[in-house]
Image (cartoon, rainbow, N blue to C red):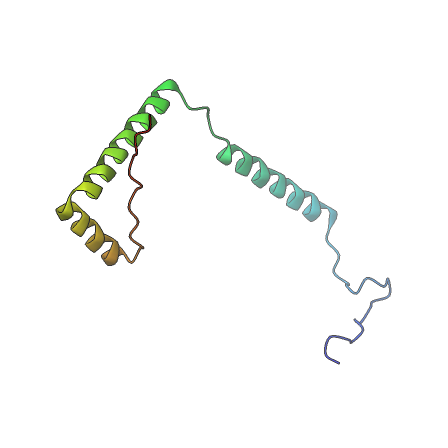
Length: 101
């Protein structure tokens, strides 16, 4: 059947007669190592500072406030729904806070 064919092997049995010159192999290995180092450096993130944490907390609080305004305002809720429809995303409203004692 298809795919059952035996590969044509060269004299050494490897199926490939392509040989890579040693200087090319060393150059390739060096280039690969450099790319790996650059990738490692680019994905390493610095620890967040106190300023970053404060900005994050403020941003979350503002987003929470906006979500509350949308939930409690029929006008804003209508605009939110229209915006979601225009952006072709599913409309989801935030769960409301429930105070417990």
